[in-house]
Image 1 (cartoon, one colour):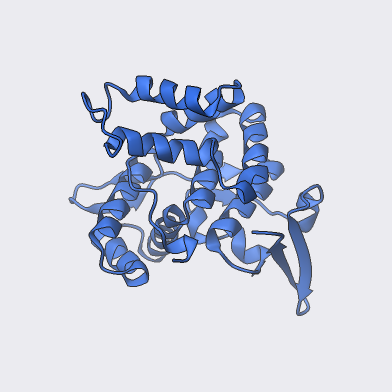
Image 2 (tube, rainbow, N blue to C red):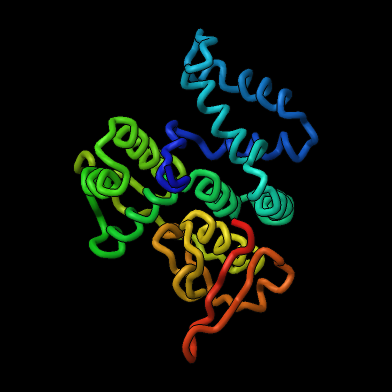
Length: 248
C-alpha cells in the first residue's frame, strides 16, 4: 500500500507527550530509555493496569517514538533539523514543528488535515461526518480508518487548532498561528511536501497547502532553502517556481 494511505496514527496523542519525547531524545536518552520513561509517564493516563503490547499505551508510545526517535531513515535529516528548531524557537511555535513531523512520518494525519483545511476554507464550520466520508473515499470503508479519523480530529481539538461548537459533531477552526520565522516556515513547507507524496509542486501552492490550515506562512522564496540540499527548484512556465525533493 502507498505509504500515504496507511493509517498508522491511530491514537489520541497530546502535544505535551510529543514535546516530552523530543526532549528525552535531545537529552541523549536511548530508544529503550525513552520507551521506559514514556511508559512510566503514561502509566496513570492510558490503559491503566495493562501491560499488554497491544494496549493503547503501547500503541501511543510506538507512535511517539516513530515521530521523534525511530523515524524512517530517509526522514532523519528532516527530524534532525526539527530538533534544532525546537531548541532555538519559542515554545509557542513548537506546535508547527510537531505538526510537520507528525504528518511527514504519518501522512494519514496530513490527509485528515488536508480535508479539514479544504472544508474549513470553503464553509467555516463543518461536520465530522463530512471529513469521514472524504477520508473513506480515499482509503476505503474500513473501521480502522473511521476510528483513526475521529481520533485525529480530537487531536486537532486538543492541540487548539479546532474547536467544538454547540452542535455535537460540528467543528470550526480556532485561531491560526503566523509563522514569521523563515527557517521554520521553510522546514514546515518541506514537511508538508513530504506528506503530500508529490513528485513536484509549485512553491506558491505548497506554502498554502490546506494541510497547513492552522498556520499562516508569510512570503517565502527559494532563497530561504539555500542551505537545504534536500530541495531542488526549477522553473515551469514564466512565473512558477517548482519544488522537488531529493530521495523522498
